Image 1 (spheres, rainbow, N blue to C red):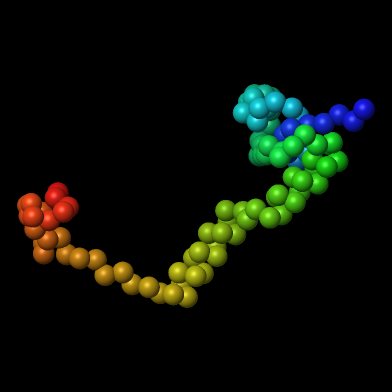
Image 2 (tube, rainbow, N blue to C red):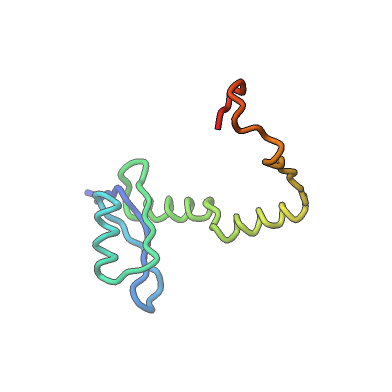
Length: 107
């Protein structure tokens, strides 16, 4: 009988290389246990269905490859902002009548 798991992820303990982990139960509980034991860079995902360890690790790797890292996304956004060089013209508050009750927006 093959054992199946519902969550998969990885964590790092001390100076060791990250280690893949499979488990059953809640991500929050598993993360709390690992953090309490000194693990860092803890990352888990819930599997769409119970999977064997091999299938779960393949699924996790595929998800990790498809998910952009924050550093990659923010660098891309900054590059696009530089390309566009869009200037936004803001209205001067002094020209607005904040006491105008006829306006649908009353401040």
